[in-house]
Length: 424
Image (tube, rainbow, N blue to C red):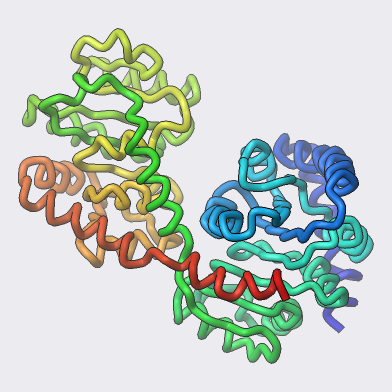
């Protein structure tokens, strides 16, 4: 019943919404246009690579696909002849992974009609399919079931407040998840919420979250590529501000000005979440009356400026490697950004109060590796405490590093279920 209702009532609404968004949203336009060319490239790839086992991995966007990378990389190490095709819903995932070496082809997932799903699977003919986190496309799942293609949902989550648990809607999601073979969740509580749907078919188990494996691996790699002159941080205590928004900076900067006066050896590096011209100039204007600053692109001309503003992307992780304390942005905006990345380096992490969608930020605070601040005064007091007290800083850093290490290892649990799906 649900496939019929979904295709008659839900899909037309979704398609209409896409067409309306196409008129106003540049990202949606890129995604819709890219679907045609990406499928053409996939056809060429399939034609040139016949007869090999293919794993299809789907993620919504770039962030979700980061969670798939530990799985893919370890799988490729064990099965080097396996073809891995990654699909994405959003342009961010598609465009940022075109050059990712561990996958063989990248494609936009077709719009979720029965015809599109059948045509896509007929072309790809995957041995198995892995969905990451939450972005599940019903017709594609049902089409896999009809064709006998095993389907896994990995890194799955379902909060108590999830709409998937609401009356009527839960029946629909039961029909979708019952077409899968394996559902692997990040925690036992998430597994229990999936079980509450009374699914009869898939095996459900809690194996952990690959994000911990991912940040651990990235931390180990980025330590080897420090992107700054060594003398810049020699004899300094360093505060790295990662992924900040103007709302974060309105709270942080007054605290920073006091800290710079209090601690003459403090060096601060600010990495805006969006290093647009407007944001960079906003920061420079705010800093101008209090402290000298320098944009990262001019780092070779550094003459002791105590605040560096990063005006490029892709270097935040190795900067965390050089930090004594990290402040992660988003907590005074909409939701805190990635607190696991600095924690993986074994440094204390400070962030604002908006952490409702970040279970790891709450747990990190509970373990003493993270610290929530709610206003300018709390921000100053906490940062000063961590900068001044080396013993406290070291203890909090150990707590943060242990928090990540103790939760790593889920990739092995996922592969224990995935490899048999591919080889059988």
